Length: 198
Image (tube, rainbow, N blue to C red; front, side, top):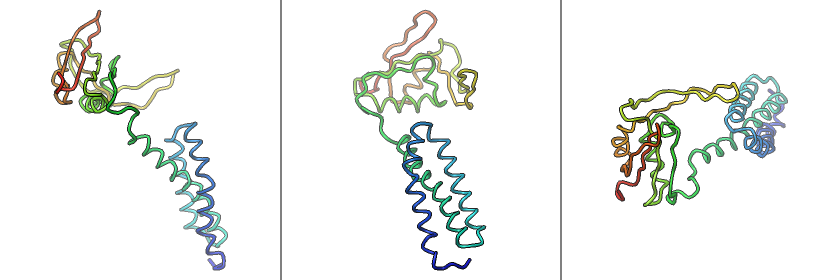
């Protein structure tokens, strides 16, 4: 490639570009969502990497490493933000008095026992979960749903339907007990609590 005197700029160009854009990527991620910006930063980083590998002069290599650094800034801040979103504790974990799962939301994620175990960890020892269920005798089953908003459809999401006649088993799997089961009109509800306090 020649231009050995410019070798330090190969590293410096990347570092300058990534450092200068980290705050921009973070702000854009907060405003417009992290997923698509993180994907964009991956594409920019990979494009910079491929172009760096194809460079014929030191000047090209430095310029392409700067492009790679633009994507690298997004990767650094995006990865940290996504990990924080997914694994940070929820506010007040262990001190919630009540959690509500109405309108079939016990089926979010397609695995009601896992969702109920997560909610159990958020409750204080005397806390309760109010769950809306399908009518007794209706089948409990896993399915997939799409959400429609203003004519736009989401991706397919895992979901589950839980029957009032099947809530005892699911509660037991989640270290919860059914405190009460009742209907109001055509809607069915159950009140769940820590198994130790039932």
